[in-house]
Image 1 (tube, rainbow, N blue to C red):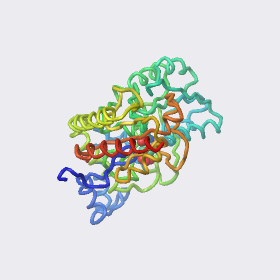
Image 2 (spheres, rainbow, N blue to C red; image 1 turned 60 degrees about the vertical axis):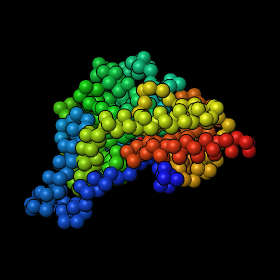
Image 3 (cartoon, rainbow, N blue to C red; image 1 turned 120 degrees about the vertical axis):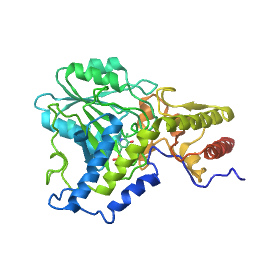
Image 4 (cartoon, rainbow, N blue to C red; image 1 turned 180 degrees about the vertical axis):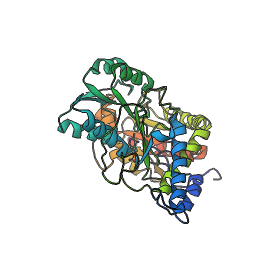
Length: 387
Ligand SMILES: *Cc1c(COP(=O)(O)O)cnc(C)c1O
């Protein structure tokens, strides 16, 4: 059994990723000797921390084609999405009152948009096609002179599809609407250029790219008239947009993670793509009724969401004790019921209930995929016999 991988096997990279050891190495000194407050301007402890935070800002900016002064640190993509939607909504709703978003966005976008609707803004919720992609004609038809903000995620966290961000950005530019994208699942996996894609605001998360949890960033295009109203009031840090003392260790870790992603993205995508092919062909060759959810090509390779007809996803998960994957209700596993993302692409409740999201990433090995395929196939066959 030399090929037996170490158990349990982690295949849930959309929920979070393990911290890269090289990231931890970069962070450690900022938990110990370099403990200064980066906002202390009168001594070297503060300067040291500030310098490290600004280097991290530069590393994050490099990954998305931004400038250093366009990166604002936050606690994560949830906070950044709140700042984009509530902050821009509250600052400009007296000029333009409409927000356009998509039914398959992350909960924190949908909930923030709902708050703005409760506060009196008009919200247009676009659907998606059966492949999970937005129809550009729908976007073009929805944007009008009253549209303040369009928010469309770059890569979906449940089904991995990549939206046509550059095309949406061009439409927004043409109609002078602000464009925000939640890129938490995209950075480090596909090339992003905020300039070429006409992105005004972007949300990023540390823990989805082998960095620490509890840190994220908000990209805000400089030189535009855009100034969101802060969600957090206080000492005016981060250009007055996000008050509160920064956590230098977390910022440094996020920066290092972006730096590694920039260097390794291409090779890593190719390797993970090979593993994803192995996984999908392994499942479809041994089992009837396996369907890949979401567009077959416009996707990141590390997110394989499949429906397996005739088995309950929760029961399948329960019989896969050694393999960490998630099922139908993906991100909100506290909530029962079929995933709203799968519903939005027209997957029946039965097939949504029998779906698995298998996430592959930097630490995933061929031996792990071989093990996962064997055990998923075995478990499905057993459940189907007993059904
Ligand atoms: C994980 C995730 C979030 C939330 O990010 P946090 O940094 O955990 O707050 C938001 N959007 C998407 C698409 C995500 O995958």
